[in-house]
Image (cartoon, rainbow, N blue to C red):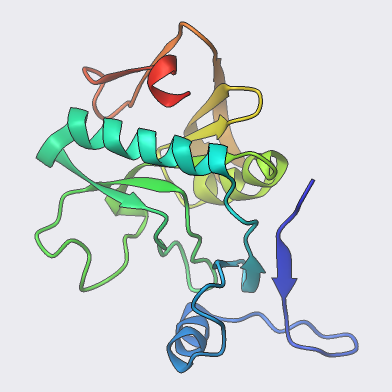
Length: 193
């Protein structure tokens, strides 16, 4: 199982936490290769696992389904960063955002802009569930779906709190999912997998 690697400054006993501003300046200065897939989690720059074929297909299918079903009601933010705090700029697989005329050109989406986060995992399921879902909940993201492409199940998380999501539900073959924001828009398990 692959896990996210950390990039932290070398020091004997102190760990430096990077701010979003410092992280973005490093990106702009070309400190990292353009091909590096990174995110800032609690001030630590994490190298994300490479995207496998099953993962890529699931993200593409899900993005297309959301675009077809929600149309102009939302913005589908695919594998782009969101801003949760001064030390937290994750890059979820999909974020379903409130519409904004500038398409978030002026500023990255923040918690109040986010309706749903979707994370797709093939080798990072525990990390997405134990680390990222807790951070999303603590920052008030109302809902998160975790797609496990190996087991072909979806875990739906809702009712965010400072300690994590209070409610979790499993979805399997023949089940349907609907966002709390748009309960009239239903997704079948088959549309995902």
